[in-house]
Image 1 (cartoon, helix red, strand yellow):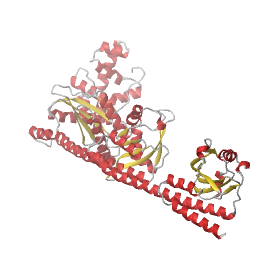
Image 2: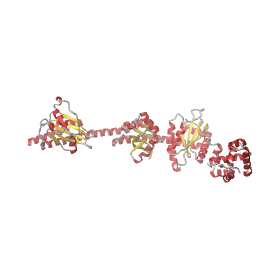
Image 3: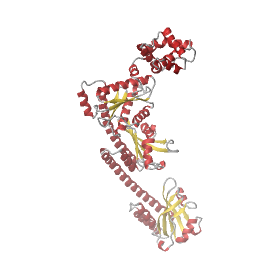
Image 4: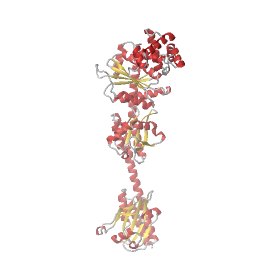
Length: 608
């Protein structure tokens, strides 16, 4: 008995030394299968990996000195009807006294093919979900596995499990070290790319390569979204994906980045209007510079969970994109401040001589002596006064980025409460006509930012600083007039005549007083007696006080119209042959129907 015990102790020592002499996982498993068969009664052994999700146990390694003389053996067995799953679940060995007569079909077949009888199955290592490794040892003859032998085999399996755990830990640490070294190298590499001003598309592709998943790069300074390869769930080509991100879903993606996931790291973005059933699951990583969200990385992991090392790479990418956007922010901010200062002085007559203007314009690259148009974008009244400065800054930066993509020189500045844009022609003879789609694009961009439609005014062609000053003054009058009558959207240079523009700056009370003095008595008479002298007066003035054309437009007999003209003279003191009185009446009618938004006087009825 003591001899047998000593022999087992020596074998355990040998096995421990054998399995612990290698750091390669595959080599350790092979050594375990070999070590357990060094002494009778065990002649062959195998180690299987249990895969519950697949429903199989799969051969990892086999020790069989006679394998060359046998028929090819199976390397995969169904878990249904196999004891391997039970061994892992219970953590206890199972002894099959005679595999030729056991209840497990797989073992009966292999026992005949491999010429073995008694089998012992032992758990080696287990993982959550029921997966893990199971070792089986086989004896060619039927043997009795006494408690001591079983404890011996369990000890061997325990040593083997420790060895496997050790090498797996070593391998995990090696992989972690390699990944950490890679993550540290990523910082240096990304900084070099940023210093080289790598394009957003290249940066998105680089981020996707580093993280192993599609990435959308959002630049909130220019309200842009950029991506490289599409995610599998999108089911579209790269060209379709790039168009979706940069055009169709751009605003939605910018809003997701600006919200920073609204407190949730993972968000779902549904895009049914682009493709039915299309929903993208994103991990939102905001890019913040000086407490301001200037962009974001939208990661599409496709069900994958990022570990700590992945997040180090994500952090490196956020830092690199932040540096890139910070440089852009500083550059755009400095440029915006210079343009704001220039146009502020130009419009407010801060310079006294043309030489001063020319010198400053030349330094900033602004051609004030070439044909140019001044475009004015006025925020709607719904924007709170306290929010205007930040919103104007955001709009200026976004429009500057849009215009930077164009072929022509365009300058964006903030003057008082408006965005002003100077569009210059290509040469001295050009008409300085912006592309037809540009004003609408600028207007839509502002509308998206403030959630309301702005006023857009496109001025006449200017060829000197003085004309630019006059154009700005005119634009301010038009904007004020549009606000007064509740207009928004694009307003052309001929939308309001010069008198209306001049009166746009007058106080509403003064305008109402002017209208009441000339039309008040007539309006009161029309309301009281259901006459329509105001309508008659308007048609007469529109036709140059020519009776027959006026009668035709009114659908009256000319004698009826003469009667009305006489009543206007006798009852209200109107002399329609007097040019000064006629001008005052025309202006009052225009102010009444347009600027004051008043309803037209007069209705169906009969003459008094």
